Length: 97
Image (cartoon, rainbow, N blue to C red; front, side):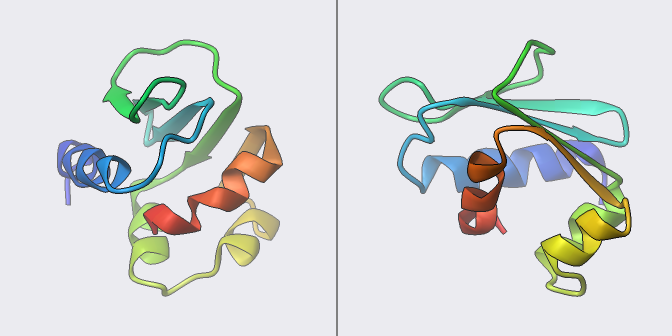
């Protein structure tokens, strides 16, 4: 699955959850997926701006998380998933997985 496909999939999922009330950035294989949840709905873009929480991982790790082949805590402890910033926001992302 290409990063563009992941972006499209995530764009659909973020519309299904309440606004996250913060800014979240995913970096997947160097590609940016930025979610601004400060308004009445979550809005996704590809801008690279400061976020309350930045999550960095490979496409392979993202797919394993989506398919429940790896748990987020294990991915973090093994360095496959890196979280910078608001950890509470990162924990809320179970709704997207």
